[in-house]
Image (cartoon, rainbow, N blue to C red; front, side, top):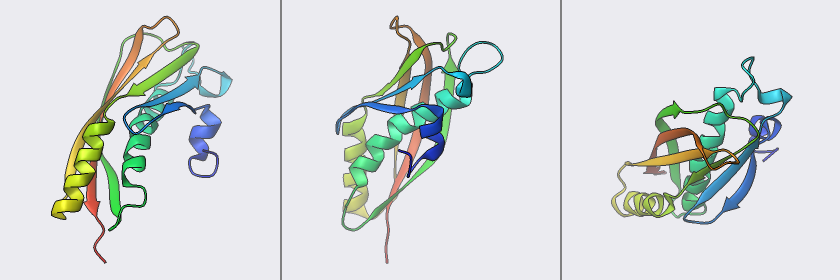
Amino acid sequence: MLSKLPSAFFAGLRVHDLTPQQSVIQVREKWFNKNPFRSMYFAILSMAAEVCTGALCWGAIYKTNPAISMLLVKMDGEFYKKANGIILFTCTDGNAIQDAVATALATNEGVVVNCHATGTNQAGEIVAAFNFTWSFKTRIK
């Protein structure tokens, strides 16, 4: 993560679990990523959620032929509780992402997919939820 996403590395994001169907990204509250209100800064939560969905997207387009480009085109988030301690963001939209990439490959058209990432604290309570819209398109040479 340090070479590809240095800001995510320094913010404390870590891959907790990654399969083609599901991604779980962990972030721990520490001095570097907290706000004055004694919780995690919202941008850190947004970053963890984006990486959670983006890892599945990147995995789905890895070494496709022809190459597929991916672009984040929309995001929104809701915050429910203060984010303290360890937060796990989970996205289970891997199958929908793989279907979107397959459609983009088959049609040479741009395809969008909506992905959801939910952040939970150590007690299992939802602290934040994000929706990301990713676009996939074949790269025509």
